[in-house]
Image 1 (cartoon, rainbow, N blue to C red):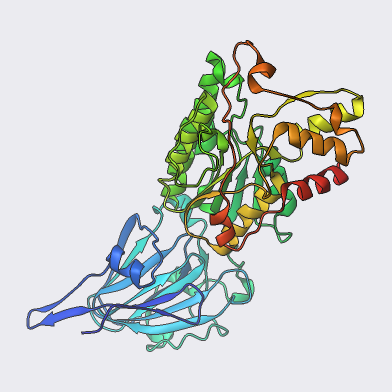
Image 2 (tube, rainbow, N blue to C red):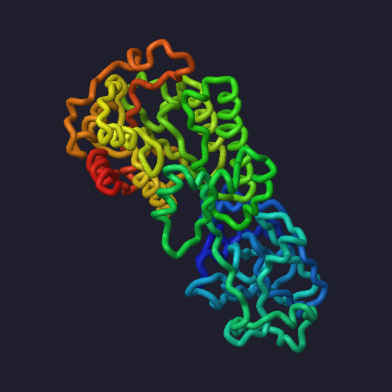
Length: 466
């Protein structure tokens, strides 16, 4: 009996599976699909949602070549077929073909965009395929077809096509020179007008593949807008959208809005990503911690102090349930938009001498570095999980950051007056509690090969470009 094996073919992502078949005088038995064993053997964890079976009464029945907008796993459940596959995806591999005979002991994983066809070689042959999306008439409109007799693909059909049983539709499909290649799935960035969203737009590969949506274009808190998204067009969603008004979240209206965006809407987004087997990248915050520890690791239990932090902690837990996810936790974000550094620079130029708290300790997280780290994790296909990502360097106070801003702008850092958080906010109502220590441990992200810049080197570059 053959051991379970997953083998590469000449088409990237197209995998030939050798299945153990238990045979005796009565017939045979096999585990046609066994997720745990097959994923361990090298098959993608593709999570099928529908199973179809094509029954073919006579030898010579020929079907294809069809590339559907989903992954599928094909196998014979009786009889024997000659299977043929052609890469119809955009890229250098366009037009490459692979063929083999499939009996009870073989199966093939077919990635989205690879055309699939087969010809039966025995009577009463059953051809089974598991797919990762539900069939619909709308989905069928996204099929890509190739002529069975295309000269470039050069499929060596055992039974000549003029002697085979072929549908009229399959006989009229276009040849390769007339086939529009299947475009790769794209990356959807939500919250495109935020600081990290803008940084992602600046760093995204020039070849494209990214769709950027601001809140005005797609508000994830609007269930109807979210439901209208065609998630089948995407492989990855980067969620840089959030309610971030820390103090306003302490009000009745702010609390509702924070929970609606950071939790309820995120739960719907996470469910959609799970259903479509997408990678979900989600931005988290140091506010999920109370700051009692000097340095926060990824596996520290959340302990948020205020409403904003509570909603972010709840959102992290939701995203952790998505099979393919990255929770990217950052702190003290600085980018293109309103932020502490921009405020200090404005005050320095205006001749204002500000009082700045010196009892909150952490590191700056420049949006450019956060965006670069996200793109790094995606390109690396790093293991799913939570990753701390801020700039590096000695943890400092907000007052120390302000002094550095003044110094870099040629102003006297002595104009900064250090003060305590309690003195700064006084008895003003509606002020959210802040974590005293926001320093994030960066060992995990560094272990992936990503090295964040020193925060003050990044600060100097940021001010030079402002």
